Figure 1 (tube, rainbow, N blue to C red):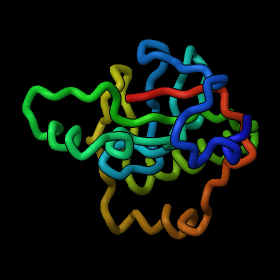
Figure 2 (cartoon, rainbow, N blue to C red):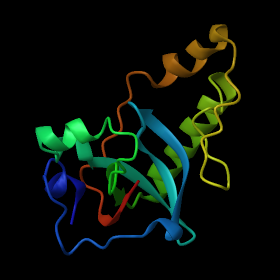
Figure 3 (cartoon, helix red, strand yellow):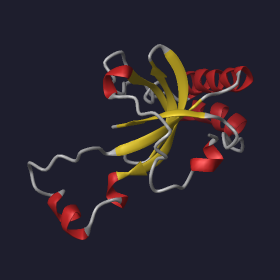
Figure 4 (cartoon, rainbow, N blue to C red):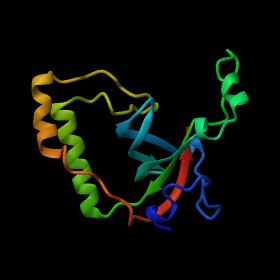
Length: 153
């Protein structure tokens, strides 16, 4: 199944396998809004690109949203992501983009071995343009990529 076939669906098709948390880890994120939206993860030793599928806030009733503000409320999940296979050429582009981001912007989007976002090194703002001038107008499009599974945080 291709990403374009599942993007925007409210529910994940049953034929797409789920990978439990102990089988995967984030390596870096490329997009973020109150948490990761897209990036690279490793599942059972193989790298995949993860793409936002849905978050729990879009699945809750008004009463359930109100419960979110209770101290002991724990959501069953927070965000779900599709896992896409990339071609060798796409991987080369992703890795080069990531290397340039680390070099000119920082490593604050990388995750450590324990799955925690590093948040440590941000390069001087005066260097950021060296990355954004090169990549700002280059959107990733993985609509034709095969989806091999899904994960959730």
